[in-house]
Image 1 (tube, one colour):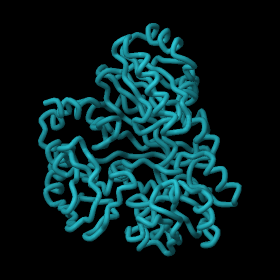
Image 2 (cartoon, one colour):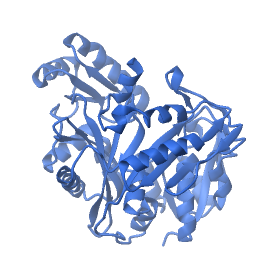
Image 3 (cartoon, rainbow, N blue to C red):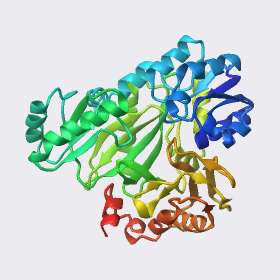
Image 4 (cartoon, helix red, strand yellow):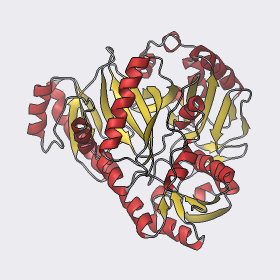
Amino acid sequence: MIKKILIANRGEIALRIIRTCREMGIKTVAVYSDADKDSLHVRFADEAVCIGGSVSKESYLNIPRILSAAEITNSDSIHPGYGFLAENADFAEICIDSKLNFIGPLPSMITSMGNKSFAKDTMRDAGVPVVPGSDGVVENLEEAKKLALKIGLPIMIKASAGGGGKGMRIVREESEIESAYSNAKAEAANSFGNDDIYIEKFVDKPRHIEIQLLGDMHGNIITLGERDCSVQRRHQKLIEESPSPFIDDKIREEMCNAAILGAKSVNYLGAGTIEFLVDKDKNFYFMEMNTRIQVEHPVTEEITETDLIREQIRIANGEKLSKKKIKLRGHSIECRINAEDPDNNFRPSPGIVTAFNQPGGNGIRVDTHCYTGYMIPPFYDSMIGKLITYAPTRNDAIRKMSRALDEFVVEGIKTTIPFHQMIMQNDKFLNNDYDTGFIDTLRKE
């Protein structure tokens, strides 16, 4: 039985996990860097251990120090959250070898789904629709050129081990292939220590829609509906909602069935997400699988009345899924509140929060580790919180979000709150007339 969980992460996701653990009667251990000593996840955990300097590689990516913290606190499990080591198969393997329960999928699953070209082949073999592209890694520039002409432009060059928009280049003209290929490989090597790339057809003006999955040790795999993540910039999601206003019940069922096929093909265990691109004719194509909890998981929790962190812990404890069939109800929207300046190309805005007021009321949820006087460090991701609304309809959820954004006060730094306020009033967003290029179009206007 899981009795004490060390959370190998920081900020709002660490605090989110702590809250569920408290409700389950499980002790928690926070790890923190020098820069995070005043973060709320440190304050509310049962124990806290400083694991190093402010830079991630000295702390949140330092596996020996994390394991040492687990040992000295007698932790029996580790929850990786998202980002950092969450999809690091070596870390998962080391945890298991150290007799620690890794709350996530098996290392082999992380490896197979983390390699995007291998994942694509696996999904194709399972009968999941995939975007036309290379059969595995593209070895050299000449092969890239031949493949691009065979598939037909535009194409997308993507890092095989990538994520978060790193190592990705769109090629619309033949003359761009060489520079895009070289730049994608260089960025992939720098970001992931692996310069393998693959090529696929670029789906123009798609919607980005993902299916949430849960799989237990008893062979049960269920889906919890979809999330529409199409409002994004540079492949970074900004607003998510569930259910998607773009697809109907028939397409939803087809996508969920395809996701289950894919998950069963690798005997998936834990929480995971299969992401699809959906074109204007509602044809959907597998894009990637994330073998962890997602930033945007709260919108799924709201419309399914399911605590996904609780389910992760129960699965890791060997228990069966608490539900075998999920009913979707109402509509939920999430806005990522980042410490960024939208008027200056979303430039990061670290600093001291001089005033902080969270919105409240029925159907309002705020996941954040911030408070008045908190120093937002410059060393990590700029997201400082998530504002989530729930209502019976999409229009109601949007109106509730607009009201909540007006009440959300963060002073001393720049945030994306004004940007989200603008989106909630935008006719194209209100009328569901947008795609993944929506933000770029707005910026040009």
